[in-house]
Length: 380
Image 1 (cartoon, rainbow, N blue to C red):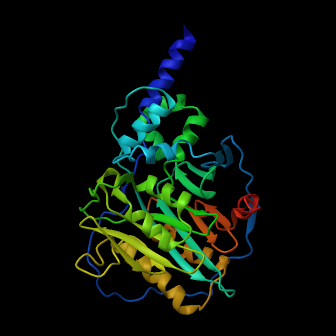
Image 2: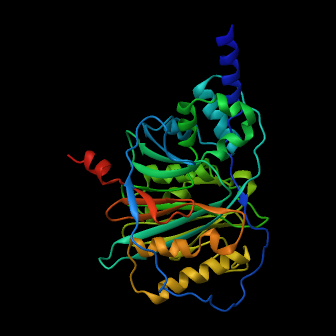
Image 3: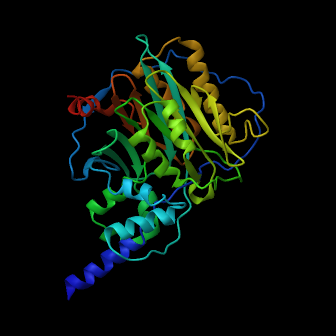
């Protein structure tokens, strides 16, 4: 009887599973206006860092409090989701997962949550493309996901597990690590694949939303990122793939994507009146960059972060991975005296496929993993 009761609660927990996404962590909305450059110098750089190699396994393994890693083999049913026409909302994605894991129906409300972000794409002295990314939010549980699908590119990405479990309350404790990892597969917020493509989602604080309805495959913000990591080899391919989708913004909140590749392409993908607009840019924070009446709308702090990163590019012709780390530190949340933190920072080398990650603004001690071994595994 006890086992039957526990099984019932586990099933109920699965039925409540939500892939939650996203509002913003700042509240002010304004248009772009000239401002003075921040007082910033490259003289103050960090000392030598320590990088610990990551060895993902099929079990969720804690690297330190708040940061874990897992390896997932196969596509966790993602190809079937696409074959069935996708999912036009987070609820629909969770419904699909519920049917995969049990056979029930789903009903829940998503929690409101928010994030800010900064991304930077640069070249090093050897002409290799580097991509840096900060994820700013309140304290959360982050999960590094190494994905190894049978068909598609291997990738490394990051998931905020709180976006999955917040809506479940106390029942989230009954969700097994295996089911949580499978759900996380559908919820990446950023990542790099073995072809050297990097992608991240950044929030824009705007009352507009994204609800495309062109008769294409429906995907949400995070499932679109999973689709690109699995299938896109470069920016042109990623843009073609996005054109085959009807994108639906999770929680109705406006976002844009930063996408870069090993060939040096770096773009922002924005959605204005449900039309995809592409702008070449090495920097993306949390305001519209596309030309037009929306340009500059976003939080005031995101403009400051943009100016700081832009000054970095002006002061050095090329940056190495440590320089990108330092640039991310210069716009991390402790510089702004806010309650949020920069929960993680990625530095990707899109040529060598090395990924470095720093947790909660500890830029002296990070973790490193190379997708090169996954890429070589597939070579004849």
